[in-house]
Image (tube, rainbow, N blue to C red; front, side):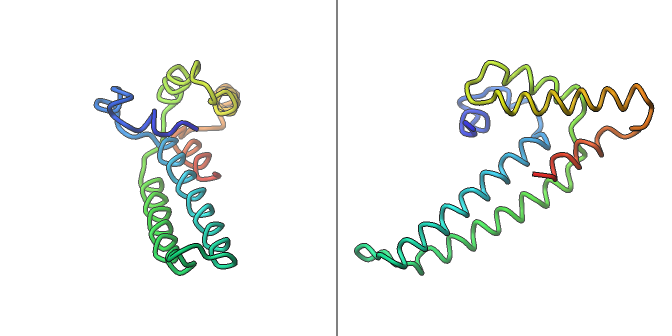
Length: 138
């Protein structure tokens, strides 16, 4: 994912007028989790092969900070009211030609198709709960 392109205001002017979306919070949480795992791997490598003044204990505070970020983003995701169908369709349009987003767009299209089927059957009354639950599955 090219998170920088989508979250940095200088690269994506829409950020100035559009509130943060639940899927974006979930993406940030996922990226934070991946960063934490990379830090843990670096810590393990440094433990078995220290280099210069860098020791494995130097990574401990960074991992604690990553845990804080992950928990904070999780709290924000739980507090978010959820993304509407219109919001998700707008996100599909924004990212449809962006390289590396093909799988993401395909998965979101499948969720929207499923939501449409539920709507046609009348089984899903609160769409925001569906998308909130879907984002928390990550």
